[in-house]
Amino acid sequence: MTHAPELRAGDADRQAAADRLRAAHDEGRLDLAEYDRRLAEAYAAVTYADLDRLFTDLPARPALSAPPAAGAPVVRTPARFPLALTILWTVGASVVAINLTVWLLVSFAADEPVHFWPMWLAVPGVALGIGTVITLRVRGSR
Image (cartoon, rainbow, N blue to C red):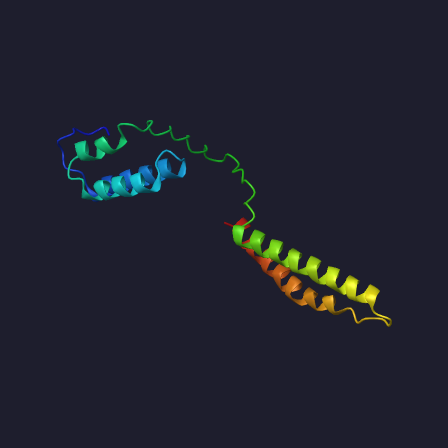
């Protein structure tokens, strides 16, 4: 911190310290118990010295990149595929694969043609596809 250690810290300073601790936890520098302990100390801190003590064994904050110049094009990175949708697509593909396998086994064992009942899995598949398109468009517009 750039302030004198004996000065009292404000709410914004405590919140900035909490954000910095969260970043350290996200980077794997703090385990959950240590993060929880330091977070409680950050919100209980009275002076800048109390806050500085929380970061003595952590690297200094990375330098912030300069904001883009006026008129400079903003480059957007593609949004990650949401985890929930990845799970839903994986489960859906597994269900389709299992149903197709069972239908094929039943069809080969039956003497007469078997109705292609796995086609009904297209209904939730179409709904999942529409939900995926909507989700990716909404996330892409942010």
